[in-house]
Image (cartoon, rainbow, N blue to C red; front, side, top):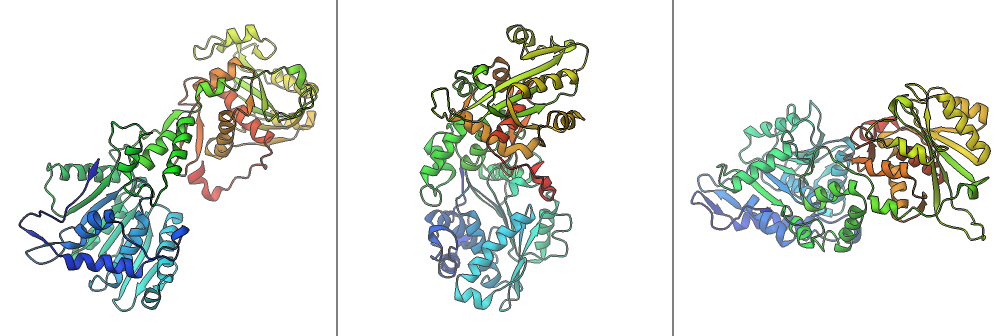
Length: 533
């Protein structure tokens, strides 16, 4: 998909002012410089794509009736690393120093304080990089100003009072695909009503397929304007996305979504990201959204681990060979009626021949109350018949914590259990008892996005065949059932509610593996809880 506005073959009511467009091009290429990466310090050389399809239509197409710019509102949407942030920074400086608007006011909206700081830093570094801008632009904590024009640019976060009392001549909503509340942006747009030729732009990569999302609605509107279904001469659009019928491994699709492929983003990088998506199903929506600029399912839920890759890790596991070996335990205690699992993870150690292997060995033990043995999602009976010493049925309607403790005690006698990690949700006093009576240190590990790095590390070790599980039938079933989701920060969590069956053994294995890999004891920073939990 490619939606663009042309500055050629214009309707009779408009004309193209080459000098006005060239004025912006010259300003950007003369005064604005890169400040990051291998181009740091070099002039910002606009690409032909940026000049032909963004700068020239936006700033060169004017109304014959009054000579003012045609476009007042618009959308720029491409795959990640097209250069959107660099272009927005340069245009912001142009608009407050050279647009010949009386007391210009540029408002740039971000979704979080962190994103706002990133936007401001880009503008601030661009000011610092050129003597002309340093002389004419003052930088403050979250704004820049130009005394010569009485202009200013403010960085705002998406909060209820953002946009109050403003008079914007230029507005940008960066990464609007992550917008939660469109009201602050609407305030900024409506604040521009007294300006003669305001320009309000949404700039973003695609978001979730959610009809209530402000970016989704804006892109849908752009498609309707482009198709002639809606007449809106003041609406600008530049949208690059991969055609829906192209697979994600199509390099043609990558180039459709980012015409700067090979320049601002390297082909080898995308090939590496593709490998990750092919091995990690939870990364497919990420790849699809950010590199193909396609909208993704709002749930973001995907299968967690390719089953064939798990099966390739079976290996030979003999518990007798592991006697006395150091290991680390993970305990996922059920809400009394479901499956409870303990997984031991044995770090690499010399084999009987004295050769050190690079594989972690995992082994599982589990319990289920007799009342739930016939749960159709879990073939418990066949597992218990094949391995009665590892898959146990406790009497009654709830899991017997005494039986769990007795088995953990027997495992500690049989193996060198150095530590036990546990999900605090249902554990009650069992962890305290294990620590005090069995002298095994217990580490609390919160679930959800807190566990993201550990989930990623465990999957990486599966994909690299650094895990040996001996073909454990229960773990195989649970890996097959496991579903996961990534959030906006790129963190991943396993989803019990969205999985096709029980995944308690997978969660126990992830916790045990984290401790076996030597991870530091978890610390929980609640200042970033919104993005993590």
